[in-house]
Image (cartoon, rainbow, N blue to C red; front, side, top):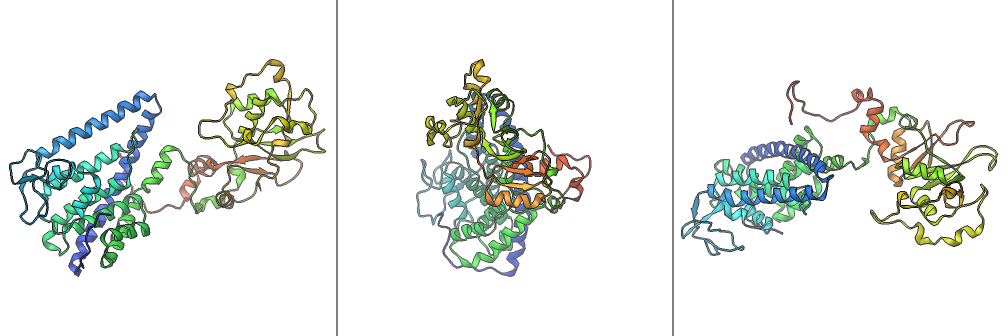
Length: 469
């Protein structure tokens, strides 16, 4: 993609210590990047929850601040004479070109403006390029690294398309190139390869991916001889960053409240059963339920599924009949499929429905119970829920291990898991489990004593009294 180099690269044993130092410091910087990004996103979420005007003002503020930095910082960089062996015009005026004039005299260019006034792809190509060790000044590279580091943090999360992958590559390339300038006299690697390794350290420390990143960066260099160095940098930076916090994607999902289930259950989940995390009160419906009760439950709760229980005289003993979805209940209320008496509905009940009525609606396109107008006499009528239930929902016994229930929930891709009692004679359903019930925050809030026995990876803890905002 960036046409870095296809020449054979040779490195010696004394080239390894600078690379190791680059990987360690890169992991620390990447973990700091994740920490700051998490804090900024939490602030942005509070702003974005308000009216649209706040989102627009936030985007305009970040845009104006970014423009001021990009146009103001190049004034701090000194002008450099154009290289004599370049194959393109120097200096260049306009969007294209790698040697931006920016108020410099003829025959000179501004290296910092050459990075700022290019696209991210061109900036990466300039940083990764070989035989360009004399094109950038260390002071300009330090300014570019710090600017990209903080701008990529504050730009993500606003109401504008801003990603993470390419900005992290740019930031890591600037960091690696600066390290290469510092150790240039003690290493045979050129600054472009240091930039590639710097991007690998930032990607490994921020996103914590190893194999896929190694393949991606290896394809950028088109050189298998760099594979050992790539693997070394990725593994070291990931290990160092793991000691401080999680990867950036996990932090973003946690900040946005997405209940993502990990592939493997935490060890402390084996000490609990599903009944230990079931919280009440349980909301369920009878097989033939009163319209007013359905409307009241839908308005006072946000649950998406409800167990349906048959009780005498419709059954000999209380029995779990199935599960009915919230969207289906709203459809029944909207179509007003009501009965005057609490008796099973006939076959003609399905005549007023079609398959499209129960199809899954898109986001924010479903019907709301608050929009349905019902008369007082309709609130006293009944709905037969039997024909509209899922009569074979997934169920687990209340004594089942919570870790085993998590594996079942994740592997099958469930949304609801009904918990039934171990012994008969009780209500046929004890509770209902969703994704949020498996989240560590919920489990540890119910059983705080497990926090001490919870297995944790190595974490660096600050002394008491030291607090990071």
